[in-house]
Length: 236
Image (cartoon, rainbow, N blue to C red; front, side, top):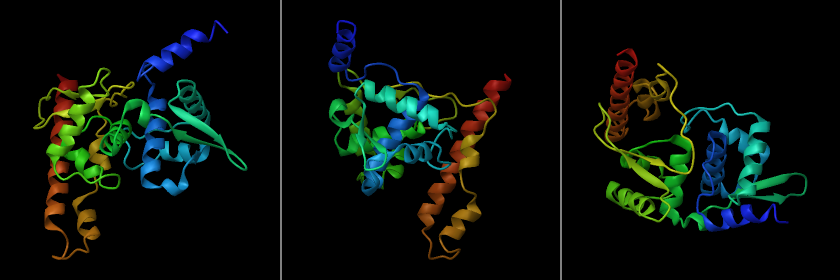
């Protein structure tokens, strides 16, 4: 019994018991995301968690976790009381247990989900990408929610200094390791749909949302600028 007591005290006394590894960060993000977007499918089976972790869209970076890595991540999250396992009729299922522990309201839950799944983002990006989970009235409302999570005794997020080529600051989570981008990998460019796809999505007519198309184009240009700066730094 004495061997287990220190771990129990450590887990109960901290909001973030330890730094999570990239697989655990991704798994926890998936558990949070699916609970908000497809609650009818929750709790999730291991296969559902695996599929969510390896999605090719709305994930940065794209990962290729194995079932074993996902099972290990779930088990470690369970040990730290960050996820729960429930026994279904035919298989075990999983759900997150961090909302109360981290003191998240709906806004904070949505923002943490995005930061866990997509890494550093601007307040504007977070507002746009959170629309399926919670509707923010303005970027200022997003920033206020982020600052609240950054001001608690064990901060969950932090605002990064603006880097060369960036017009806005970005926010990152503080609950675990953040995967580094691979050298010379223009992943943001590859992830962005071409303008022709944007036109097709709007029907290719003047009835499409011009403002939405312009925002998408501006986002692509911004990310291209960042990638150019990254290439410059790697070649210098």
